[in-house]
Length: 192
Image 1: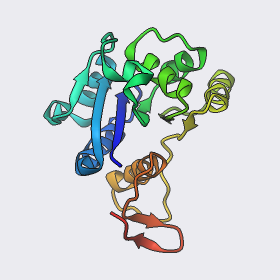
Image 2: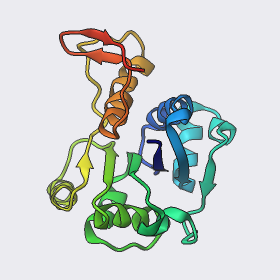
Image 3: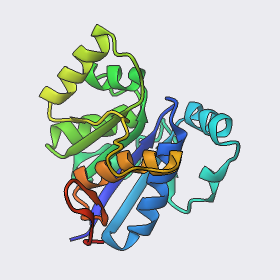
């Protein structure tokens, strides 16, 4: 069964994660029936600063504005399976934890939680303060998955992109995709 996915990109540092996730999702398009993207203006600014380009404009997905509450995933009746926020700012985490639903990203996250669907937050901040930790706890207790953008190194990545892909592959596996990727004790495992 094909998945319906929402991807939100916020203004936290880590545009490389968003780029790699968009690229991988494009390759998985045969396994996805619907994808909706919400990208904040801060996210675009961070992308331009960190990656030196506007390549987010080259992806042919449907993009929605932060105030577009007519987006299908603003309602649980649309039946989206998973929402990934990557990278997820601490401000976004805090608004999800408090249930403000003041924009499309927070509303869609609230929908995922109320419908008991997968909400994966790829946090990009360090160190965490107590407010961050309590917000992570609140979202986790509500059913969300906190997946900090912390690369692994047992696959011996040789580039920054390879290190960042260890996070993106983990996120996509959490979202329910079977990927060909490094597995502890097995190296690369077929499953693409």
